[in-house]
Image (cartoon, rainbow over all chains, first blue to last red; front, side, top):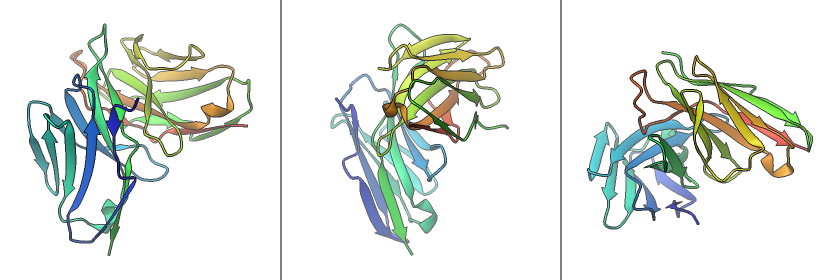
Length: 116
Length: 116
């Protein structure tokens, strides 16, 4: 049972336009959401995050929106640049039972291609 | 600030063998999590170590085991390797010397394990 879903395996946009990557989740216990970017042969790089008590977080060209009632979040990249081409993973964080620490549950990723 | 490092980069083993992967956490972090990323999938949580003890575990069998050392570095051991263990193994560090654990995890480049 996949608790974090990224339903679009790939997305192609033109340089300068907006890229919108979507993510849905099912577990109401998730209280923190993160986006990671991954290039081939590298580990995921943390991009931006949002707490479940907020509905928007912005960092430069990157904005994450959270719709808690719909259990949906999205990452907006404006303007998109060719260097943004990578696999983007949505991850959700929940406290582990019996502990005080958190584990991340990832979606399968969306391959973003930004064309010059 | 030193990032998360992992060794080796690549590894080839045969079925039934045992393997040890190593991870050095980012300076100032005291928690290490291990993830397995199969081809075309998002990273899946294996387990987490905090203060040298396992602090949570995903759906992985006992032949996956780990250690954390006083300097917060960590090892992942896999016994009786199976073909399906072929994957990218990612280590992530988080937390702070204050003892608190944060949701944001920072990943190393990974170890690519191939089981023949």
